[in-house]
Image 1 (cartoon, helix red, strand yellow):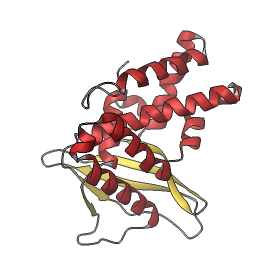
Image 2 (cartoon, one colour):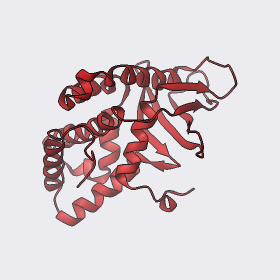
Image 3 (cartoon, helix red, strand yellow):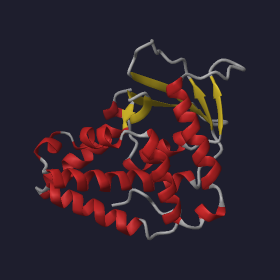
Length: 224
């Protein structure tokens, strides 16, 4: 399925991404097989850590505290530098160092608060790991998974990962073949074209983040 044919909006796309990272019940493709390769283990450990903690009342009742916790976890497992550069696309090269720093900060906050909102409310789905094509010495991998729910068709969610200094980190997620990174890049390109200003894009991101962080858990994390 081509991205142009997928009718997922930004909010639903981000919601599915967060579900994919925050599921409590996981299994591999082969019946009874439990051995996962390093990139798959990163996804598994991240989801288990988030699921275990974000269902606690201290996080469910304090959105700011929950987002700080999620930020600490994702810091280890997401390559925010690469995500920011690829998401801003052509505008990154012409941005000033100050603009780059501000954009990365606000985009990271957007992703973290999106994940946090979904992590506190996800349904009990199952994630199934598909075979991973990974040769010795590879520094990039695509972890392919399917999200399973009773009575529904499997949802394909694949993670693009890169090995940096021995650690595997996520830099993009494809949901039904639609890239989250590309989805945001298209949106931000339209926003800059609309306003004629990268500074205005960053300012609007900051305003939405500030407003959303004051809202209770369950508010739309990508509105506006």
